[in-house]
Image (spheres, rainbow, N blue to C red):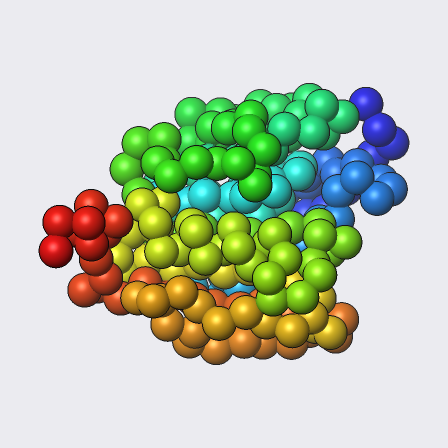
Amino acid sequence: MPRQGAIRLSSGSLKGKSIRVPEGLTVRPMRTRVREALFNRLQDHLQMGRVLDVFAGSGAVGIEAVSRGARQTIHVENTREVLPLLRKNLRDLGIEAQCKILERDAYRLGPEPPGSAFDLILLDPPFPDYRGPQSKPWILASELAAGEWLRPGGWLVMEHPSREETAPPPPGIEAREGRRYGDTSLIFWFKSETASTPEETQES
């Protein structure tokens, strides 16, 4: 297991508790300021929701969602060096029943989610993966938002380098806002309540 540091949860039922994070470049945890801004913005949409934490790493973002009232979080992570730490964090916090791990390549999630669609999808891809608006993180965001992974009325939020040119959202998805925090920024995409599912589009 890699060398470890720690971050503290900023609010909710687990406020003040620590999460172990690996030191080095394998995982880049979302900074506390950015994490707080994200959840303060979406707090009203989070209660009893189902959350997908993609590129979960140590689980900080998904765990914070549960701390703030989410019903369940699915953590997508398949890095062998990081998975034991993610499992330990969930176990130490006593939230294994609410937080499941999906060991899968985030860029190969496929068209169908495990179970029902998600109310909130959180994406924090490795910054080196960004290579313009046609790079893998933007393609993944579009696929998840427009497909069956995100329910109508749900949100997708992605952290990206501030210098990065953003991609337009796919049809049926609204770019509600973007916020900058120094060298990192967040995009907020909203899926219209009237957005068609892939099956409805094929039938029409």
